[in-house]
Image (cartoon, rainbow, N blue to C red; front, side, top):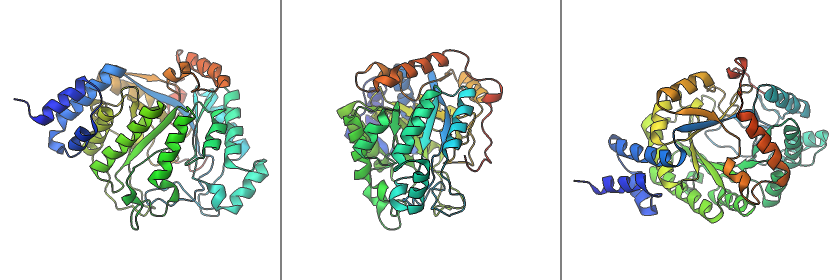
Length: 402
């Protein structure tokens, strides 16, 4: 005889996304009872995405690691003059883009700190020396250079205003911003977002809404292990779903797990356990609408391929043969041959994709007309053998700066 939980999961695996109340109920499902939850999520994934799991071959360009926020779990951000601070010069950007094109990458990921010019006069002077009055202007230039080489830009520059996103849409096929969590509690004194004004949930939700109004294909996600509860994770996923249902622009949601590092305030905080990550992934698949991809970073989950696939992911995110993960430099990208073999052993095919999901190329208004042909040309390249033997090897982890 079925329990109510079993009936709920059976419906979720065969039908549409979980209702809000049902999602909250499953938030507290004991770890010992995860098997039916994962099975339901995998059925939902298979029904929409099949057994093809994707990744984006990318170059990671951390344009600057200067940031006005001070999140307790972040080892990326710096202030001017601090050891390890950098802002990429135009020459460094050009060199990274050229190496990426030679290695067969299709995505140019621009990732940087929040609002640096609003906090640091030294950074403003650096921008002026490059001929730009704002970070967005510099990003626009870098995006044009990427497109000229056949690379498709995707930018995550923290919180942006609507006019800034509209400007970047001219040279980006997609934009991104991690929601992380909708709980204001995480912004209270002693919590990880207390010294991070741009991590206020209302501010980030506003940007997601504005991106939808601008019809920008968008990547967002939640962050696990920063002091949130399971219910708060589910509430965050429900908020993302509600925004997507209003605008139809959320192409993928990342379920990213915190990893401790010695130089951060949360150095001794416990990392989420594997089954806890699997629970969050499965909940994402069962809550989000079927057209939204669910992604988990493979370099933050070494040895987790089987469990994450069982939990319902359909994508591994960006993997680079030319640059390390500058946000998590201690965690190297997996070798593509190894990842492909692991996926094949489990009954999945690993395949490259664009930084914009293909369905958006045919949706009116979601891609700047000038970018449609470059995107289709990049898609055609993905249909040919992509990587040479050398470029299948990830960039060295010890590389400290771009």
